[in-house]
Figure 1: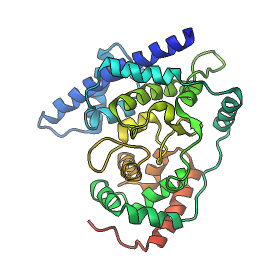
Figure 2: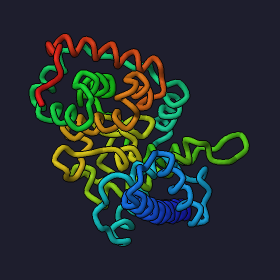
Figure 3: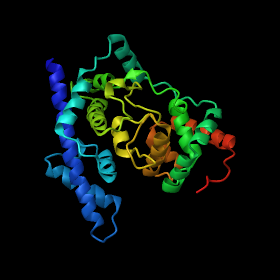
Figure 4: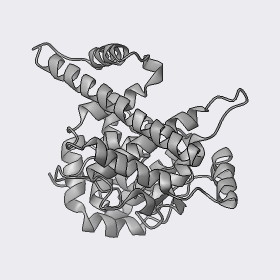
Length: 306
């Protein structure tokens, strides 16, 4: 019980810090945009770092890239502390991983399985059912459908396999990892932030109507059709209709991948933007290979209609 209480306090503290930092960065970005001067990414980063320091934090204590992305997106809906607390209690009360599953998660984390590319035929059906979304992603982000479909194919076979591990328990197990010095590892710190993001997403209604305990994901804590971590889904997911974001809705997933790739520099370097999605050259090669096959199967020699 004491460990649960400590975890609950830690997640609530992380939520409070993130919310304050986000509000500050959002305000700083707004002031920059109203200055009448061109605003560079460096200007935004400098302003964000000033906000972080004003809260008694160091930039290295915060995931600055994610914080800036979060604050640059649509403002979150108003949520009370009580609603956040309820979401956190639900996460904390989820049963922990049993020893066998915990060992499997650790084994997969230590030696991730190689990325797999399915046969491209499944992409055609996904494209036909969601062509308006792919058209909008191309119009809004300049991202071609074959690259979105390539990522979604490698990640989950276009939604066929979104993971088997209970998400809150998996993130909790990762957050407990320590290094040889007894201090939390980088992945543990990230998982703690993901637990806070998961609670916010739940309280804000951005989990497709599911509660955290109903979600199963990957051994790394990724979820949904595009396999975003909760922090990434919170910061970079977008819905094509501008509404709430459902990681298990194909249209939201495809549009969000388009936004993610655009934010990772797709217009300048497609392979590098895919690397931003997953830091693995083998992954990049698999996605690009599947994308080429998908393009051929779609007969997409030209960009989609605008």
